[in-house]
Amino acid sequence: MAETPFSPESPFTPEPPASPEAQENGPSTQPWPTEPAEVTSEPGSPEPEPILAGPDPEADVPEPGIVATFEVPPLEGSPDPAEDGGGEFELLLQKIKDWLGSGELQAQWQRFRGPLKGLAILVGVVLLLRVYASLIGTLDSLPLVGGLLELVGLIAVTRFTVTKMVRKSDREQVFADWSRRWNDFRGRE
Image (cartoon, rainbow, N blue to C red; front, side, top):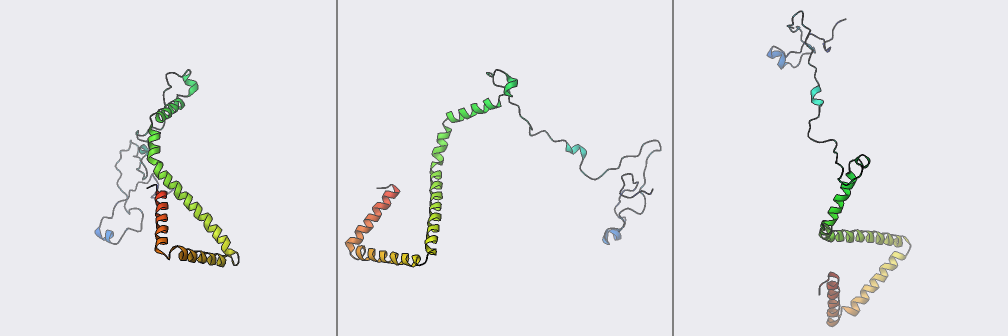
């Protein structure tokens, strides 16, 4: 049986082209060299193993750096270490109790209370606007309701303008009332 050039037992080793012309013309069409490489081995010694391309088998051994498992010794007060499994649960409970007792939870609540309140208000406004938009869409789909509501709105604005915005004293009273309401809303006096 003839040996193939890709067989690990092949006596041929790939060599770069010898002349610059072969390099300029591109790679050779033959995947193996035309002349066999010289193998220098003594008749009594075994042939050297060929070096195969690929990952190094010694590189598969993981480097010690990250511990894959972690064992927690049992606590001093536990009655049976084999029954508790090392005391992890008691250690976790103790750490949670220490964290709650340190007052850090209250400090974090004080720190995040403002942003959480703002986020809750934002979510509430978005939900309110979605409900309002769906209600308006439903009313608008009914015949004549959209036009009637526009007419009612136009009448209300005209009536408010005529009764409250014509005289200067009425305007000042309306603006003072709006300013008072805005300051009450913001919590200022």
